[in-house]
Every structure is written in C-alpha cells, then in structure tokens.
Length: 257
Image (tube, rainbow, N blue to C red; front, side, top):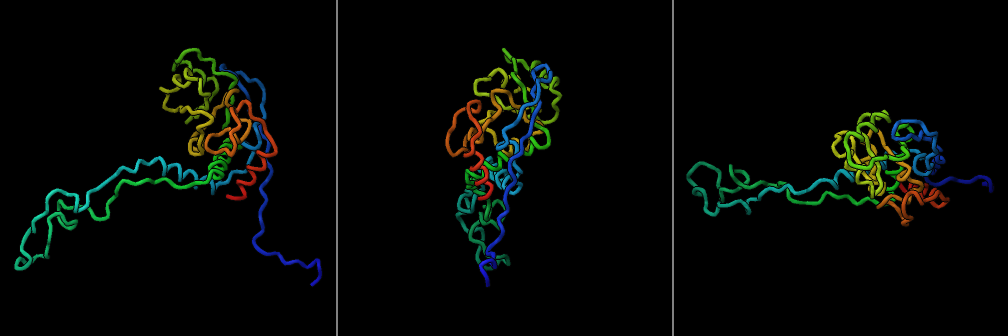
C-alpha cells in the first residue's frame, strides 16, 4: 500500500450548505411598498433540519401538557375494609375487598397519576429548530415586514385594517416589542392573529402560523437574540449584528444535531 492509498474509516460527514440571502418586501401600515430588505442569512437562510424541528416541537408540545390527571388506586378509594363475602361456599371467585380493580366501584389499576411530561432538549437543538422554522417560512415567502404599526391607542378596527392592507390571511403570528402594548391589545380580539415577542419565539409557534410578521424594531439581526436559545446574551435584536461567530455556532449546532 502506497502513501496515496488511504482507507476511509467511519461515515462520510455531509457538509451543510452555506446560508442563502433572502429578501422580503418592506411595507407600511397602508400597504405601500417601501422596497426590498435583505434578511439575515444565519436566521432566514439555512436549510431546514426536519428531524430536529420534529423532535423539538414534540418536546414543546409535551411540556405544554399539564400532567394533572389522576385516578385513585384501591388503597385510595373510600370503603372496602370488610371482606365482601365468605371465602368459600358462594361459587364466586374469592375477594378480599370490594374496592379491588376487578369490582365495580373499585380502584383503577395502573391508572394515570400526576407527572411531568417535559423532555430534556439541548439548547443547540432548540436554537437550530427555531432557525430552521424561520428559514422555512422565509423560503416559501411567508415573512412580512412592516416599518411601524402606527397605533396610538388599542383599537381592533385598526388591526383589521392593517391586516387587510397587507393582504395577510390565515393564522398570523405577529412579533412585537415589549413596549408595544397598544398593538398587542389591538390584535387580542382577532382569533386568526397571535402576538408574541422575538425573545419568546418558538419553533412550534412559527410552524403553525401561515404568516410571520415583523416590524423594523423586531426583525432579528443575529441568532443570539432569541431568549432560551442563545449561548451569550447579545442584547436587543435591533442592536445585534451578523458575525462570523454566529455563523460558526449555527453550523456547529447543525453538525451536532
């Protein structure tokens, strides 16, 4: 065997494609076109990882379960202290308590008890699932961007007008800043609209929405702005900037997943 005859050991590691730069049309509350805006490729330009999204969304739905269902065992059902009938001579199977699971009114065998359904999910997986979900919505053109909501007072009529001007239908997820209480209250009476903040975004919320609406204040500029998924707190989204470290962390999360 010569030096050039090398033996490859182990599976071939597939390289993830580079992030793609995608654009979104920026509009105002009246629906007028203000020009295209480039989306951050490390957030909206990744190749969605379907396996990670499935696992993380399953864990998020499991964590939302209350886990308070409960049944009584034979030891917890009231009564049943006396032997219901004689051991022999009745022709029936012997019984020691009327609260046995085999008898009517008895306890439940192997019934549900209060428990936690939470699953341990690494932060890198939660992070990659959210970025994959955002990239999926950007890839199919379901990201909307508005310059400013322009709502001085909470009015449902104004919220309906904005959605009609933007021509958004279906289930709409609106990402707001923490101090935009008037906008949140304006959309609270609309069953097709759901409001959240960029720090509370989850892969499940993004995937179940038909449209994802950002404003100039809430459009994320770095993967590090999402609460619960960042490695280092980088501050608000409007102050975050793309860096080589952000790209490296995203690629590392995809490799580990």
